[in-house]
Image (cartoon, rainbow, N blue to C red):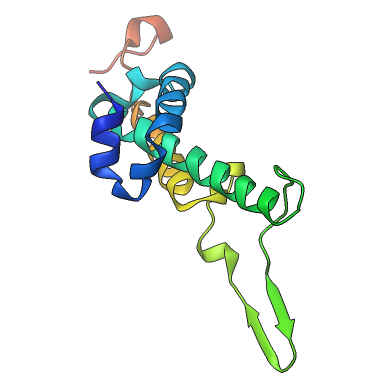
Length: 139
């Protein structure tokens, strides 16, 4: 079962956030469909925690700079300062339909895992599995 000590071992960049990690770990266990994730359930919890800790850190940094914490902005596609200009191709790093999970790399990894789990649970067959129900008889 996912725990904070293992989280900090797997993601040492959050060693100073263990107290907050406890809260987000509980939220991960309450909000994610862990049974559908099988052996990846713990990793999904850890990615959920990391995603939310990064969002918390961004809000704290905004508040320290005098900005309103929790304000949402879309990704910056271009920026100019004097003769310097930078732009990014967000399409190559965002996952369609992932919504706010795209806000962090951890969220993107979690969104991909959740998408794979949901597709992986579906079984497709080109022939009916219960032919008597459909009135189909194969010879």
